[in-house]
Image 1: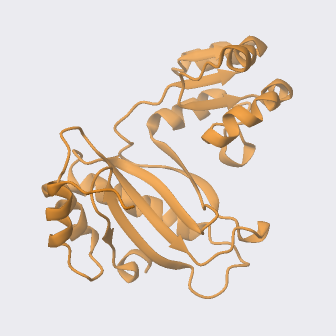
Image 2: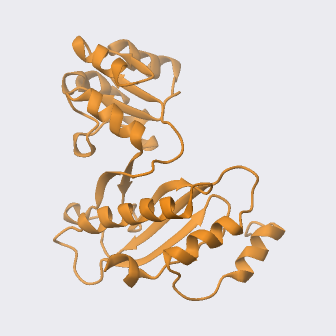
Image 3: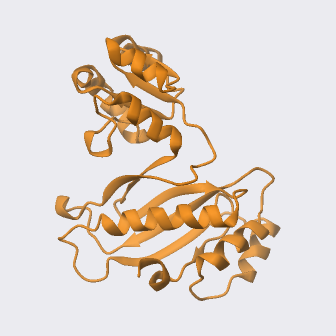
Length: 232
């Protein structure tokens, strides 16, 4: 049984035309038809012509949005020695070594939004795969969260670094800012993310790479975007 939609959601849906919207149309539409009282997150969804079951068609990467996400992430850095001071100096909220791993493993502590680890500490962090993996928090060298440059990693995350990864259905879901941002800033964030996804196209992908793109806020209906405008 489908969930019953509220009056505002239904009203917004009825205003949507069956066509591809430009970003200059879609963003103001979502801002003007805001449904909830809180500051909703704007979300981008990209349906890609890849089969993620094949490793050579996996699409994954990171990008720093020019205007951030409107929320400062709480960063945990797992390191030792001088790297502890570097992480603290860069603004990491939580810094420690094996004791932080134990706290997560034994106490179920998860009051953080991102995790960075130095390579030498991954022998301990590896024990957290079943806890951090499903939450998208497991440090990974491919996205720059397993590194000796812990200060740089922390600063990027604080600046609005977003990870994108295609799901089992071939779709990327990613936040691109808050609905209260100026439309031009949201436009730039969306464009930056799309360019990063297009650049990450695997060579094994054949045919149409970006099949469809849509934009919505946390509570709003989705707007289909004009793919040609966004990918050319």
